[in-house]
Length: 292
Length: 284
Image 1: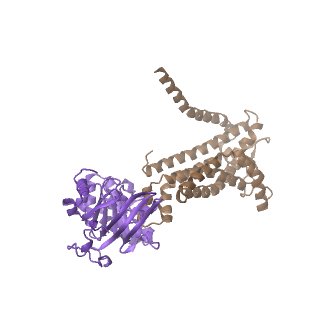
Image 2: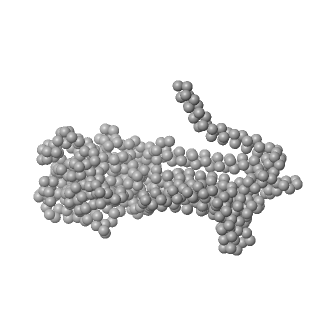
Image 3: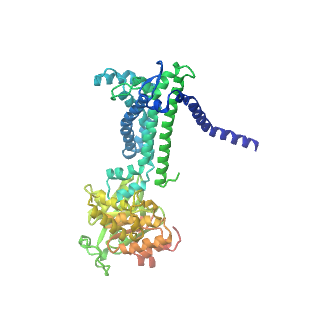
């Protein structure tokens, strides 16, 4: 009896540990990040055009960094949506069971490759290739980062989108075929709309993966903290900024707090993505009558 | 050919199947104008290596209700799903033998599956409306068949909902989600969706299996109205239902057609011992 209670207690503690970490991280981010707003105002911080944290006096405007993240994330969408959704549709609609049994694990292995490997690959192979191809001064650009992030986010998108397609009840397809719809009509007018919010969830989680990715963008985006004019210029996403600068700041300095504030903003962005994805997928399950 | 399974073959005029497909002829003389809508000859059907249907010969008569009865797993659903080639969706299946719709082989290499499915509609066991509005559900079949004209589409949707005896209940909310309807209403919506594309034959695969008695009665009344203009095939577990709604009944057991004949005769004086035992509840 006593042992029962002990086990119960242990597992409860384990289950709640995630909550503990989440609260802990949030508290630290706020505590270390907020002081920067005493130094510079919130609007100046978010909207300021220049990021010169080591100048005297320093500039803590993170607009170039936010735009850097935004550009590579949006760019990544152009890669991971067609690739990911296309893969999911192929796996679900066209691939036979045997092909699916081989392809799906392969897609998932792609998700397991460490980001440093993508970064290395991008730096050594992709960036020089892009530099030559477009005849630009440096190959490390927003475009390069977008390509790599897109490929990295593809397994996430493909895997979740495929799940949501396979949740579409067989009866919907049968009903569609039974009134004389062909395969393409069934796919575009019944299956994809029914799986639509699941696919949106997949895309949002893919975005969330792209926006939080650090190592790759640090290695292939060029690292210039300027507001980009085109995809073929270097950028410095928020994550790369933190990774590059954290080691060189003085603890407790304004720069240190500014980096935490960037972390806080990143955290809020991904939190919003995840909450939106959760809301959409819940509504989707209700819509298909799958319950919660 | 097994004549035992064909009590009507002898009386059917040879040219009957080629008659013009006149709709809603209120024939009183059953025996003379028995036009065949679907002709099944010597079919075997396999799932992988296991044979689900064995040597079946049968005719489905135009503007009549034909019921398929038999214990679970006897192959009755599998059988009717051959009439609109729904089993094509299941991998590793094989059909031997001939199935004709209006005298044309629906499994020939030149057969147009889309056209066959439009002409042979189907209503499923569990109501399966799309997660779209009531209107969109009924309009779907029209749209995929290329009807774009908005006026025509609306007219056909309303007409189909009326024929399916649903219009009066939902006319104020046809743009609401179909999933808010009750089970019985959803099933009538599925019937309307099927009627919209103007089929000749409607296959009902246990349409009342998930419905309450009142909804069931509504569907049965609807079936009797629909047979004026359509050829109907219904699979049912419920023998009373078969007796109430059908003109012809086929009894299947373990993939074989045991007996087929006029419902009244089959239920009162079954010729086969097994049919009798099934009807009297000795097995099933």
